[in-house]
Amino acid sequence: MSQTYSATETYSVADVEVVMRRVTADLVMIASSSGAVTEDKARDWGHDIEALAKNGYLRMVDLTLMSNGIEQKATRFEVNTEAGDFTMSRPGGVLWPKVPNPDLRIVLYYTAAYDAAAKEKMGSKLRIGWVPTSADTSHATLTSSASRDYVSNGYGMQRRDFS
Image (cartoon, rainbow, N blue to C red):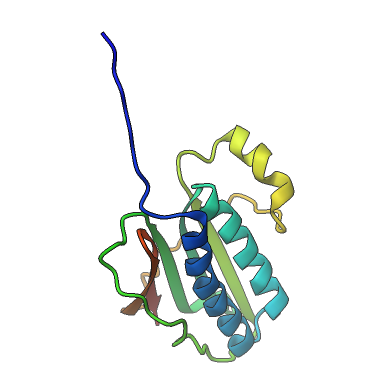
């Protein structure tokens, strides 16, 4: 008895790049407006997020503006590999306030494929030394608001904002 399997992806690496340009634009706008990190740091985050996404290792990104340890604003980008029905949004709407003692916390969530071998493979391709965290990203003290979709063919990121 023989078996066959075939699967077709409805997006390419170029589609991931198109979507990641928009995500990185949001990260840079957040960094610039909040003053919590440099724009270069935000671009490094964008680089790593894109590298992980291109290899199928990224599931979600959560970014939170903290002031004296208290959540002020947050945004979450969730990968969707079946986003063909989404409508492309423009980056923006993320001019965050300047707050006392600002800190931007970024947490990446990986797919199951990001195992020890994948971490080894990606190590030299990432600009940031990502470390495990137990940070609560439920944003229970914030209210979810409008979202934006970034999509190219079947690859997308759904952005949800919290304030």
